[in-house]
Length: 151
Ligand SMILES: [Zn+2]
Image 1 (cartoon, rainbow, N blue to C red):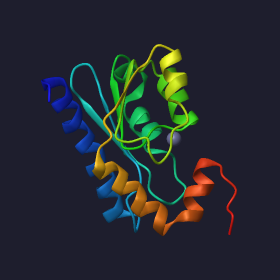
Image 2: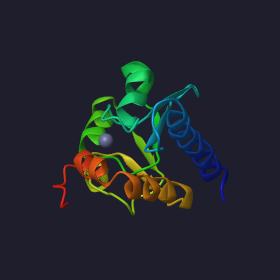
Image 3: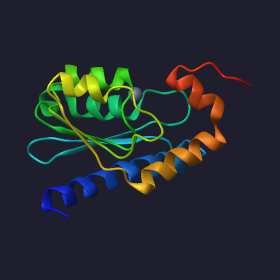
Image 4: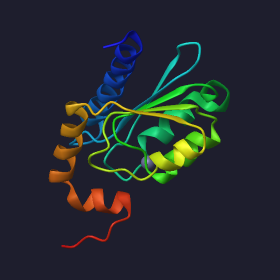
């Protein structure tokens, strides 16, 4: 693994840890974690809390603020939805690193078309995070991605 890829995995682990911390604090289950790493190396976290709160990516971007987000890399355990991808573009994020996109993928082509460098790490721990959440909270998951609940 190259040094750059190792750094990406290290930051992604912070996003996984952010999701795990929210699990302990407010939610019975981990969901999505995200971090924004600014050009000067500052790290800003966000995590979706399983209580219909804002998405992890938006929380991390808002924590960073528009100035620090400019030129930063957004790390997210799950491929971003359209809302989070749009927020990343608004904040001038040039690079998005994604933990996994097997569970959900809606915005990667659009991000690339807008000049964003999109990297998918495809990490098993990120796949597991979502599989556990969806198995436990199928209704909340469907609601969150805008899919009609079949049950
Ligand atoms: Zn989102």
